[in-house]
Image (cartoon, rainbow over all chains, first blue to last red; front, top):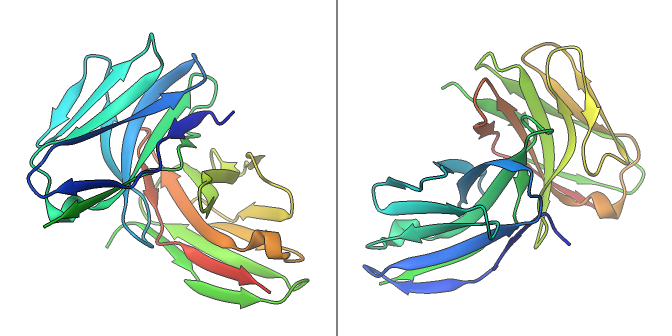
Length: 111
Length: 111
């Protein structure tokens, strides 16, 4: 079983709509959580960290559910420029600095 | 611009050939990493260096060697390339926080 699992998608979203997707992790010792964004044939870039109480960054909202071991990302008012692959990333208490990456969820925003 | 620089961007090798992928960062980060990314697999850690002078194996180290030349530079060597090493390779660095900065990647094809 993969340590971090994501629905690969694609999630086809009309411009202006809301899209949400989850990521599950298997290691209960996971401590820190992140969402990275990766554009086609480019390097991953940090989108946002995920805090226990949930957090927002503009149109993006991240949630953490430790009991069920998943994190979520919600994108409101989707823009064409939001089209990308979103990578779920976790790290554990005994692996400082070593991030575990999910395979990514592809989002395609259509006009 | 500050960041992580990887060379080369593209490379085609014949089976059995050797090559070194170069990576340099100018952010004074202590930790550096080499990942490979394959379709549907997510990024997998090959080797990492928590600080200058130390290197450790990651999830998929077989067939690779690394050298942390100094604080700035972390190279990845393929001694005898195999078709299974066809992949996109990313170098990354991190400082006190968990956020990674990635290089733009090396697309390697082994024929």
